[in-house]
Length: 190
Image 1 (cartoon, rainbow, N blue to C red):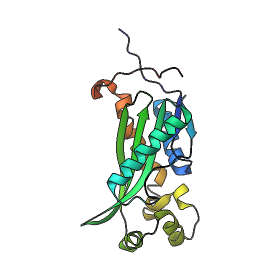
Image 2: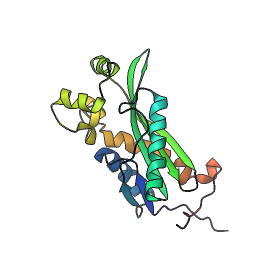
Image 3: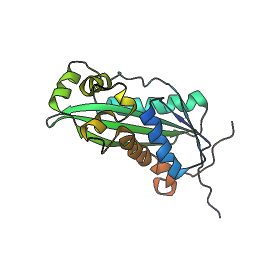
């Protein structure tokens, strides 16, 4: 019996952010080079600056679901940056959810980085990380490019790379469905 592999034709990305879209392009080019990647602006359903891991996970999930529905795509991918505060300080995490037309999902996080206390203090006061990084760096739209991680690591780990790792990890249930107990199927016809 020959195994049918899941091969999405259209993949909706729940953001038009350049770094997020580039992350998806890089990850999907390795898995499904012929898939058409379509960015779409959708709501995350969470705060502009998610302040917990739970809020970050929820934002990624909502973006994935909304993007898939908006374009009736085979896959929807949601990416959401969030911070979480703990005894060791504030950490920036990147959350990713991938959802298929049949409801199967993959979830991951990647690219955690501890934030300097001066940045954490501003975020606790209600600042959003993107504009804050613009002010610190003197650049504009840093979240569209290297982001906080890229700036803090002097470009070694730019934002697109952290999200690319998350996208790759969230694709695992679709790339190895036999290990996740899910059927590998072709997308439904519209």
